[in-house]
Image 1: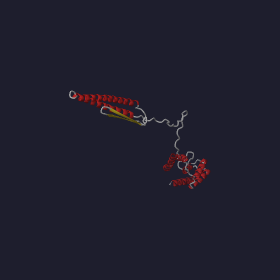
Image 2: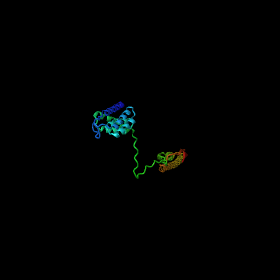
Image 3: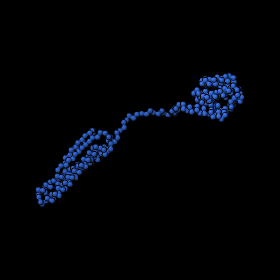
Image 4: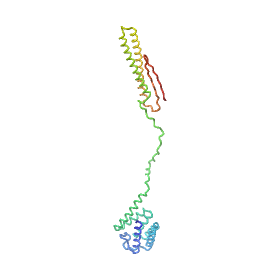
Length: 271
């Protein structure tokens, strides 16, 4: 359809030249009924012939040469069409605007405007992306990104996850519990001794010895438990922000006997 319209326009322009009559709304510098110069008309005829042969580059060259001899408005539309079909939309848009400035009939103006808008859209699609703005005078170029050569420190370990603190606190609580048990047993032995008083001297002496022995063990266990709990608090306070890593494991086993306490410790891991 586009080529048919172009051919029709070219034939119309040829008819205008043959009749030696100007197009509607001629330019100010081409008054009405002004004949075209013979040399310019020869270029127009050769351009129309090349256009019909679809040799758009050669047609545009002929129209350009004839227009240079005589800027007659009959050159503008076929020249614009040849430039567009040759792929030079920038030049075609300029020529279409000159065609519209000649004062066309409404239908001809609408067709010309549609062709010009097609070329403008093609120019937008084929435009290269904008270049980044150049730095202003005196403004230093942005520095290239640098790699962070310092490894991030390991996260701090939560204080309540400290193995040593937990072992000390657990052992202290266990020892305190054992001590409290021995003290309760000593109190029970005291009551048994008072009950045996006056009935059996041997039973009284045995219960008194048992009470003293268990009270001594209970006091020692309570003291050890309190010391271990204090050590756990100090451990939590001093090592709350140690980096996380391989943590040691500790086991402290408190085994109460009849009148004594056995303590077994085991430690493993990396310190």
